[in-house]
Length: 504
Image 1: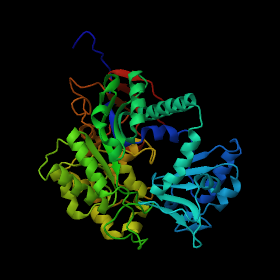
Image 2 (image 1 turned 90 degrees about the horizontal axis):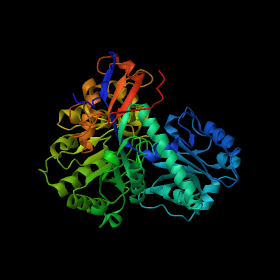
Image 3 (image 1 turned 120 degrees about the horizontal axis):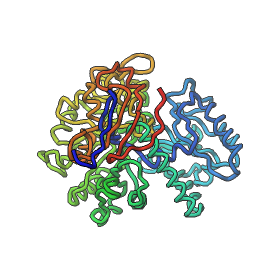
Image 4 (image 1 turned 90 degrees about the vertical axis):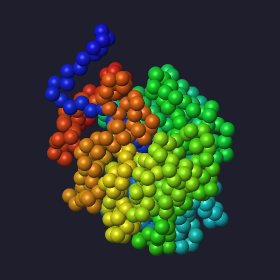
């Protein structure tokens, strides 16, 4: 023990490595803490009231933003609806002078009121983009719901307004978002995150924050860009452990389908509750293959969002074509979510060395509508099959997909080992992880998924001193106690960080 060694007395409490959330939208997490939280609303009418109240306190013409609504989790359907999605009229009546954009809990759909649609130029003649849909009523009018790639109409209008804000104000807002997201992570014992998709420009800004010592957690960042944008830029854009090991940029993110809740996941067979649809392919497979070839040539990691069984098969097929059937596992290419798989594709993850980055909280959050969407057989054979994937030789990197779900790792750890829903039922419990596997999925396995396993993910001599002191033995407590475990103290690189303790 050297003269500079710091000794910490755990006083009988439990120490774990710092947790690693393998799929977070970091800046969006901070942004979500600055806007309306719609996740607790149990009806469309409640959301209308929430937005109406915000409008009374917002200058006319300013955008109102919210996130977290989910039509499948409301206790009653909206009075006016199309396929369960709300029609904009009740919201537009109380927000005539404010454009409104409300992001679906999944992030794969959004709602816009009349004012926002007018700014976006939406009318009866606006076509659906490839990989997206403007939901319309029987007369052909847009109801205010935009699925998958169709969301870009509304977000472009919002971005145009944002560009009118002075640069200094935009920088201050970004700085605050990063601060809020970092504090939320540390409070929950998360010392490292894998950011699931940002632009080259944002990655450069994050490097500046890292160099200035203003990133509170470690970040592995995935670049989201087209093959045209990526061409010629990958080598120069690589960042290795900037800010004394805080920021790494060496991964690319692609999304080839949507989410199950918005009927956007790309399926081999139609939805049980929407027989005319198999979801959306949001990025063409030839485009995915071009990006995969670039990643291979430049030694970048590729991380592809795939939720439906068709989407997962297409990703595995592409990986096999580009990497070869005997590529080993040092590439550490990933499938983000891997939620719904065909039985015959499950063993391909381990065989190809592909890492499924799965968020256990999605299982228990989505379970109430999974069987409705997929039917009993597809749900039992291929929905969130952690046990089958692990048994076939794959490792699972866990996380939350915050702000799609709460950043709270306790929910994902509990879901991993119980698959228990709020009503006490269990969603195909034969697919549970063991307690040790659940912790590995948030530590050593997650570190491997980010090429960080030589530095973090376990408490060993020679590794960075990222660790968490808990008031609960996570490996041996009753399962229910995972949900109430408290982080007492958190260290990053051997330096204790100030946190606001979690409530029981």
